[in-house]
Length: 564
Image (cartoon, rainbow, N blue to C red; front, side):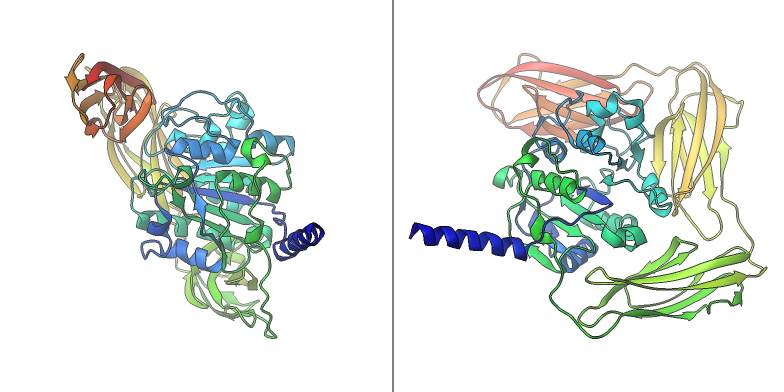
């Protein structure tokens, strides 16, 4: 009987191996982190049509659970294989074994693309929507102690530039800012951001060969503590993902870490990833086969034609039998200029005089790519060519101004493109940004000489900039600090305890505040004041409130109280 059971177990193991192939190798793995929503609030919700379309077409982990609350422990588990801390205000260099160390040892390249990061190599505190505890790479000793590795911490616009230039690293960690990751903004905002910024990745020719995209929510709502951090959504996308796969295997952050390293053929693992299984059931090929052959029909322009700008582009696509077209892209000289989610398109593309290649690509629900191209010559035309630039209306270079100084600017992109956002830097530190082609804001500055730099970027990642040198006269800016109005020092009260406080940031604005009870983070806000009730056990407690300004300077105050 025992021998039969042994044979049966072996047969099952062989069958499992044949059904689920090992994680296939990938040249480019991209992980995108979203924030603080449960599986049920995301999957099937009309608020996220794009993410749900990916979940339906590719792979969805129906039993994915975060490891802990709050965020930071999950980010560390996904990159070190251990929960380094559960303190979101943790600001200590991490020397533990980590993903970067294994990638470097294997000769793999990596970058962390963080939206609203002030500049490449920035390892400072939160600013303008960027949240440090969402960027674990900014803590690793392998990074912060290396002038070379720090340059892999880059602002998010670099992602589009690297993608379009064929310079995407082996591993990419993508971090939307706190307004676009579902944390402070809506799920609709997060979904729109994914479609705008991640959609082009899926149409990229290199990614379409063997790329792997993992979109994962870091934790569920605080009230959901199943398996530590609650039931969350995790979607796997790529040409080698089994179409429409719905995995019922329980997965957590360490399984993602294991899968990333296996797909890059690193095959060494930090922490819990060493004993975790990879997500191999997500991969495989569809069993459906058909006799039809998919294709793209490019009706216009005709190859070899002489045309004027804008170039009319008309095309349609059909998929192999058993599949359907899910979207199309138009490329002009290998730069994506238009896309939709249909099986046909009709649009026009601006182009300069000279020779150009127009390529139309379509992909189906299994990740197969179909394409057609035409080479055309654009003659002189009446369309005026525009060269992108930034106009800095104020301050004027050489001026003497007071603080706060007024910054007013506008930007235009090269012909055929559009401005997607602008940044203001004071002495190379980002102090303001928006998603518009113009700005008007005020910036606090100390007395003395300063450089004001305004940068704008377009939808291809091109950067336009203008700077001015100014002198700031005397200012009455006050020192920063935190004032706790409740509870008072030595107070005795029942639970919950009212905590009220405000903060000033000196010459810079306050960008957020935290409340700690006995050194454990309990409440946060992205404001300069707070008022909240916190539950506390009976006994003595220390309530500490911290505030930080746009420069990363931290101010704090604390009181000791007794809870009845």
